[in-house]
Image (cartoon, rainbow, N blue to C red; front, side, top):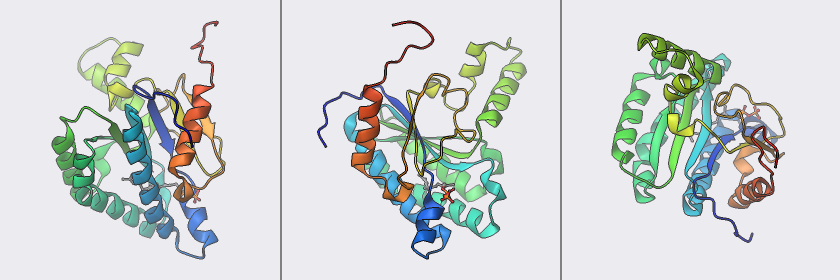
Amino acid sequence: MEEVNNYSGLKIGIIMDGNGRWAVARKQPRTFGHTRGLEAAKTTVKKAAELGISHITLYAFSTENWKRSEEEVGFLMKLISKHLKKEMDFYKKNSIRVKVIGDKSRLPKEIIKEIEDVETATDHFTGLTVCLAINYGGRDEIVRSINKALENKQEITENTISEHLDCPEITEIDLIIRTAGEQRLSNFLLWEAAYSEYYYTDILWPDFTEDNLLAALKWYGSRNRKFGGVK
Ligand code: FPP
């Protein structure tokens, strides 16, 4: 697909939905879908870096995902932890900075260690920032942000709430992409998505390709963003 636009500075978020359905359609366990979903995430991140996108936020595990079976939760935690350890070189080679958003206090110790290692090792990179949303919920993030402001005895304003979000750099998200045909936000980036454009596709996440990303970006380029004003 022809690449015509300049995406530098763009901040996008992705709800990577459909892993389970993708696997079940192949008579495989749901966890297989997550493994293949991780591959799709890597391809997408690499393409985003090439395109000069500024921030990409991936919804890897929500505060609600603990309701899944113990087996699936354990698998996802291991998958993420192994990924962070194994792909340190991938992030370094591509000059990608990694940040994690979400409440880390409920995460297994091993993951917390991998998160700290990868965040520290990639902090100096100035290209793409990947924000991994792990044990993340938009409402939870807003509540934690307000509590941090109150601890600092700050007045609660839009600015103080924005300042105390997990990654204040993504206070404004330009584009949210959701796969697998659902059209809801599912507690993703509630504060940050106030003026986002929403792109939905029926493609299941493990099937998401570079061309699908380009199609979403092209669609975004055609949007007339007014931010409540008149153009
Ligand atoms: C939603 O599909 C997907 C998830 C809850 C997990 C997404 C996680 C990954 C792809 C791993 C990525 C990890 C990193 C570090 C980038 P679903 O299981 O709800 O699918 P379904 O709606 O078809 O059941």
